[in-house]
Amino acid sequence: MKKVGICGMLIVLLVLGLESQAVAQQEHSQKIDEQINEQTEEIFGQVVEWRRHVHENPELSNREEETAEFIADYMRELGLEVETGVAHTGVVAILEGENDGPVVGLRADIDALPVKERADVPFKSTKTTTYLGKEVGVSHACGHDTHVAMLMGAAKILSDMKDELNGTVKFIFQPAEEGAPPGEEGGAELMVKEGVLENPDVDVVFGQHINSQTEVGKIRYRPKGTMAAADRFVITVKGNQTHGSTPWTGVDPIVTSAKIIEGLQSIISRQTELTKAAAVISVGKIEAGVRNNIIPEEAEMIGTIRTLDTGMQEIIHDKIRHVATKTAESMGAKAEVKIEKGYPVTYNDPELTEQMLPTLQDAAGSENVILSDAITGAEDFSFFQKKVPGLYWFVGGMPKDMDPSEAAPHHTPDFYIEEEGMKLGVKTMVQLTVDYMKQH
Image 1: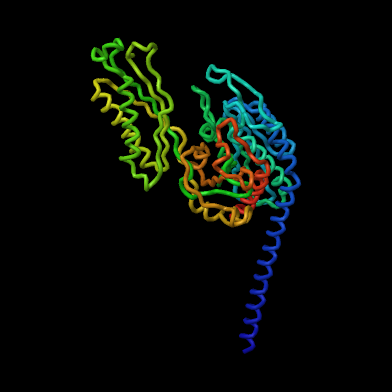
Image 2: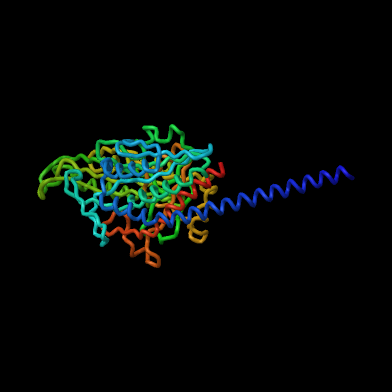
């Protein structure tokens, strides 16, 4: 009986010890969460200043020299190990925590667009430059300025929490997300090629995008395919040139192109299993001829293909080649088809998404975290996700109570972001990093 009593007492003491340890861990976690909230509020004014500086000084893809210098200078102020010139103008900074653990990658894109800003804000961009031989306005019409500012804010908070970190953070400020200029490499694909996910090897990568049509304080996410693969096609139709008054004496590549365009749309509407995943084929440019009364020898059309399923992607590519060549053949013309693979599907690792969903809910409140439909926009964050598990989400930048249909879309002159939305972006980046490290 005495032995049983001693064993029982040991078990009770063990249980009490475990409960006490669990309570202590919970209290410590709550303290960390409160610290993150407090620091986010404290530095928010600085985050806004950073954002406005970058907004007023936008730079196009692979030309982000001043932006990169601005970022690198601040990362050095934080005492981080900084590398510049990655994929031309990228900046990578490394923060080593006090304790061993996983390497977490946090990414922000830094490039602007050839769009003249029309939004009426005091820090409006007035910058112009030459793009593809044309004088254009330059602005952050997709919110990458906020991405830079949010990641700089996260770097500040995580640096201040260095003693609490169980692992290493790699801050990745990526150029050319909108695509490198013709004839150049760039963006996430080049960063990966140059080894950005190595030395130290990244275990997981997190990225976010501000959204002008999602209310401030809300997060949208989706496991698996969340954004589409984006491929470019060029179809060259070759006919026989002749006088416009006698079309029967030649082969008209313009009429043939019109038939091909109709056929391309039937691939989506009649030959693609859209209940499985969405897909889009759009012709964005068609060029042919020089005069009203000459049927030209050649016509060229350029377009985009968006798919959310890799199997469907290959099928659609094959169908485009078949429709274009056979339609041209039926008209007595010839068609050459070139398809260039661009960004892969932005694919959120399902296990990682499930694992980190509670963190998203803690950061925004469970009622503000929305499971979204996939979208046919594309993101080169997908190149990071092809190498390591990744999670990509959208954080709200639309004023509260605004009708999303009235909010200007991304890539437009009237694009607008409510800066208050950046608070949640900073907080979420930090909490995901801390929680992932605790769990691994």
